[in-house]
Length: 391
Image (cartoon, rainbow, N blue to C red; front, side):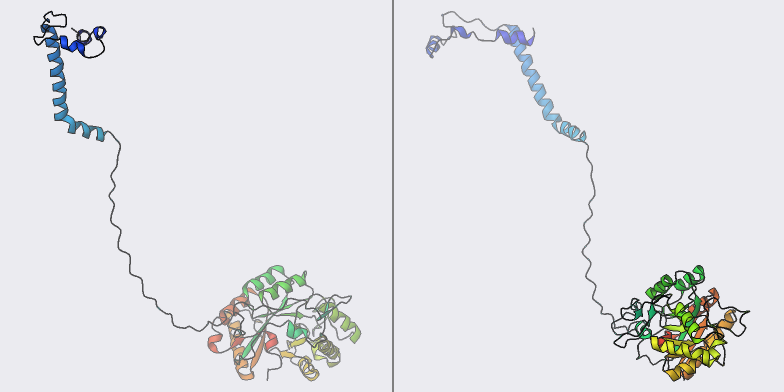
């Protein structure tokens, strides 16, 4: 017999129940039913079914008691999990003791030139932007330099700063005839240290741009004015050059043509005027114009008989004198020899001026020479810092 049928036979018939518990008094201790009839004993089949159910429940309880631990472990194993080993954190490192660094004096400038001015970093010497109001006048040839009403002079205002307290022998290097070749001029600006003075030809295209770039980098700037050489006209210095055959008025007009091409320069020089600078009558009006405009003169002394320096000295025009052209011979050894001679002249006379051209070999030897110049007790100076001090 199936379990539902057995359970159906065990259901009580509740329709005969009445409210209250009075029906219980009709039960007899003998086990008869309320009607007084003896109750029938349970059938053997029913008793067997009950026994089977009891045995089944007992077996289930026993199985659970014996296998509950294994069942729980199997259930936990079916859940994904991972185990990570966590190492203990290392103890914090003890703080390192503070070490106070000894005071170190500031390094010398990288171009082995002057000591820095008070409050001015050695690597960042800034020139006054040009043009400065009051130091320029308009003309048909362009802006011309002039002395300001308060007495300021262009050669002083536009100069690269140099400390007067630096008593070392000074060497000024003038890199001349720049501006005609953009490649050569750009190479010089890129590789030369700012302590070197740059002289530009007035024939250069975009001369005002070149001068501004040079001054922005820190170079002191001059104009290289074309003048008549000894072998003129075979060696022609170019249009608007100053010539001994011309009168003072014509030469002054040509000089102003050159001076009006840019602003921000400290003075003039010439590497071609071997004939013109040896002629006192031709040179004197130039000296007078430089004095009136507050400019300096560097006599390259392309002719040993040049009168430009002595005339400037007599007129009170700031002047410097060229001592060597360091690259007439372009061999490395010859350039090095000329630089050593400049050092000896500077130690003897207090200052020396060397002229050079922007050849790659010249730039290479100059940079190498300057690496230890300060160690030898010599300062690289702008040309404005050597005027009137050469013995």
